[in-house]
Image (cartoon, rainbow, N blue to C red; front, side, top):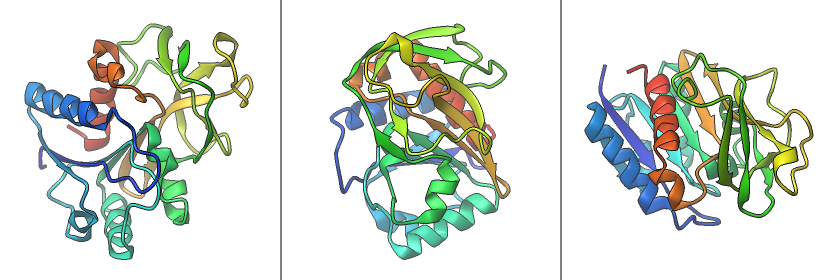
Length: 217
């Protein structure tokens, strides 16, 4: 099994200022844990065969970022057993491609102001959450989704809407989850808006756990 991941950060809509720090964090995780990181914004890279990578990471991508050929390559890659990781604005991506919404599990709807809140860990039996406390104090944008993905995904953590202002999903607000697609593994975390997240040891371990699980390291 290859030990490289491809990090894709192309944006055609809102662009997060944190992207350079996020890429640097994944590179440092790779250096620390023995996997290579290739970062790109070139959609042409995803038009080539992807089996050289253990996982593809969409890191705060936004808008339509893939060509038709890239879409076909990504779908075939995951169905054949490749890993896929979506971070934060990856849920604001490829709205025109129905498969992508199914792959990721949910699509972004809106978010309230960036503010402190509480993440409730529902499932500690996963590398992305096993190190976290039952209630994790964090600061982020607390994404709402167009539909609740529970039932089609394994929910790992939820947002406690009583801990911040402006949430609209109610008592069951999934925030982090994983699922299987074909022979592949998919992990998504809605967290990761600000550069400070990528300096946070708990968040870095969370991200590493998601990537490691999807890549089957």
